[in-house]
Figure 1: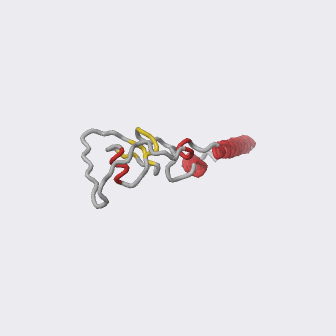
Figure 2 (figure 1 turned 120 degrees about the vertical axis):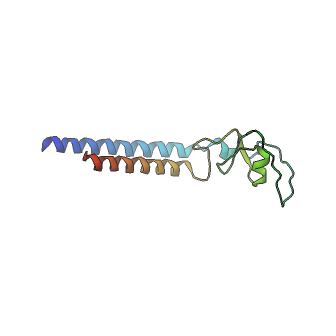
Figure 3 (figure 1 turned 180 degrees about the vertical axis):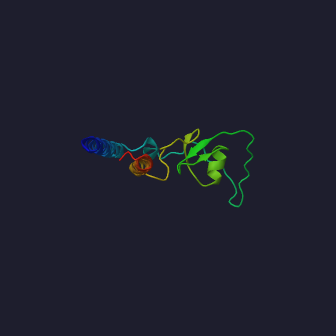
Length: 127
């Protein structure tokens, strides 16, 4: 009985440490905005397209990352055709300043990991 109580207390201590550590990490990251939030200039020159159609011929990928967090594989003309400014040249990466805020993304990730941990614990009877 004491062994199970110690095991339960140990799991509770680990969980408490993880919550505190994640809270501190989210707060510190929230104070430093991403470079894409500070830089308002478009990385590509504007290409004039008619408003009714966008003739994009893409024979080889030339990815750019839009400010919406989506990768446009046909380059600057593809992003401008979609009406999106280009945040950086190259494909988008995770946490690049897309539609969600960094603290919100971190909190979502924490909830996903916590639910996976809880599910595994319930299946194998660890808690």
